[in-house]
Image (cartoon, rainbow, N blue to C red):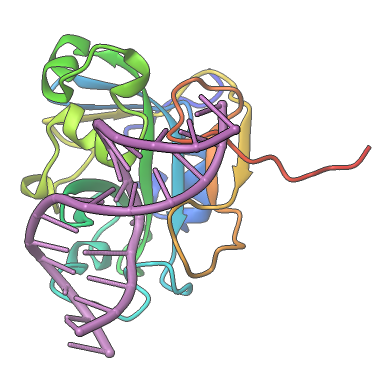
Length: 195
DNA sequence: GGTCTGATTATCT
DNA sequence: GATAATCAGACCG
């Protein structure tokens, strides 16, 4: 076992930027439906792209709560997006952006209205629709039923890149994904590295 | 393959 | 009144 879940909340009682890359390869299920996390983004109270940057509001209340809580918000008036809160009372969180579908694929196909496995969970709004996660789960713990969370046991090749769809703090390389995964919301733009 | 735009509403200024 | 941690479909090449 390289990294086995100690089933503990302590895993999340650290800065989101530290937790985020370690989430790649772990498993997340809701009511038995879900898969392997292949793409996430970290958000922190100290940077303006974070919902917590301007302090606690009604919407962001969960982000200021306890580590391991699920923070769900409505995006663009249409979609749900889910995060896992890190660092008790300091309002950092990891946005779950893509899963590799593993469990309950038939349920995901029904909810999403399509069968291609690459279109089920490849995006934060898509994966919430596939799993059936809505505002109703806001504030629940990812460490308790009906959620199931387990860190991965395999070594994963993780890439850091820029976050997607934001207009502030765009230079922070706080998007983390599994290198080469076919299930990402968008391909990673590799920094032009000269040999 | 890529890029552009409309949909739709909670939230904050 | 503007903005937004997005998606799907249209369109272009």
